Length: 226
Ligand code: DC
Image 1 (cartoon, rainbow, N blue to C red):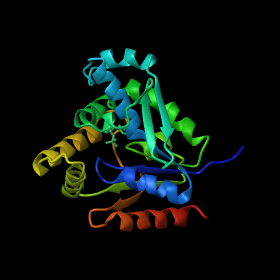
Image 2: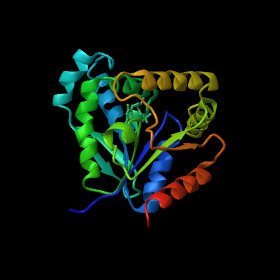
Image 3: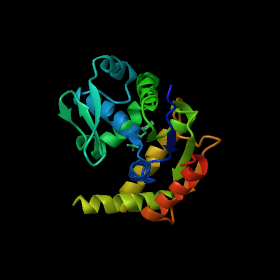
Image 4: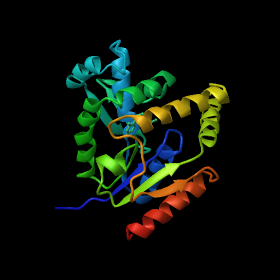
């Protein structure tokens, strides 16, 4: 049986995981899987069903009939579909971020998504990013990276991103959101955000995108002979 390579990238919101993981996957010719987008799609479905995303008794029955599909554009960008609808943009809305953090604390939601995520690693070389990839989803990953940056640096990047989209926001409120999401993700009972013991720590506070990518590639090349 063919053995596929896997690279797990975990870290808090806004550390640059998605952009860097996608670029890394492109550079290596691997499939990129943004697991946060999958949690976000579940959260959007819960919101659209009028449910409180923190309400386990309400959310769990929804999982059974959930039609979530993942696909890729020609540019390698991951798209999420809910039923027939491409929800890739809708899941990035502010309200969905908070809801995703809440649904992801429900054990049945995590169990539901676990096998799906593991299945992907059996069929492709992958770069997978999330919160629990190195600790729970792919504990045997060839390379594990814990990507982080100071909360202020993450808030500044997010502010810039929103400004570029023509959606100005306040630095203070973004920072507060980031700190609240860190707290929720780090303190939940199941699969909390934490660095795997064997993960390499990469702090991007003082690195730009290209420098961060070069650092990631160096870590991978040391561990996976090309
Ligand atoms: O990376 P993101 O901001 O798109 O993730 C959205 C939420 O989903 C985040 O608050 C935590 C949760 N999540 C998770 O619990 N486990 C993952 N593997 C990925 C995301």
